[in-house]
Image (cartoon, rainbow, N blue to C red; front, side, top):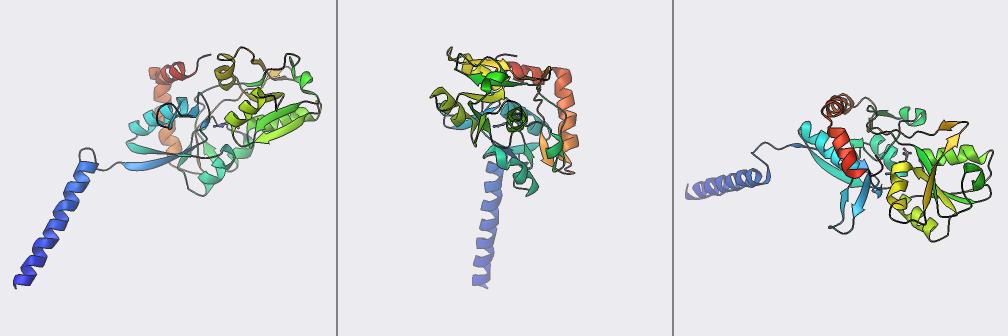
Length: 258
Ligand code: ARG
């Protein structure tokens, strides 16, 4: 009898401590559902690791994701990895969505779903070689592109008429450093990313990639696993952000050449 009483008290104590534990962990008691975002934090101003302030991942995509998921009542968790594996991460449900300056291409659309476009951009050549002034000048040169990107697709297309030595890199920031160190003649990236480098280092310049008279646009969207309910939820918030000017506000905060 005495023993049973003690066991009962012990059990109550366990329950009580579990309750108080969850209360102090959650905000206001009810726990938010965690949602996981995949990104490749090598692409400032969209996403990069802030090495000065505790290695946090920061950028336009991160602020956009924080805002959207907060509006939808989710708790955001960010997973950082190489860009080339992001579609596979979505398909194997390792992440719930991807924001990584990613463009909706017909090829990707076969595997994943995309939100509406939330930022337009265009492709450029970034170089410090004074003799490289047009795409033609890339002939015979070592040109870096990030693996699995629309920049790689563009380089492969250009290569048919302007034979160059395409070098594929996993990480864009490392590739750009290699170009600055003279190990690559040029890299292909997008204007907002290139501007982050040209604005700080006057020995670097960028020019628009124009193919057949056409600017090579690189408009970015959020990616989801096929048939994910998140697509409609995100689009709703993105539309609202367009109307209220929130997207513009965040773009102005992060993207200098807006
Ligand atoms: N916009 C290009 C693409 O969709 C490159 C994106 C690279 N993003 C990154 N976080 N490194 O393929």
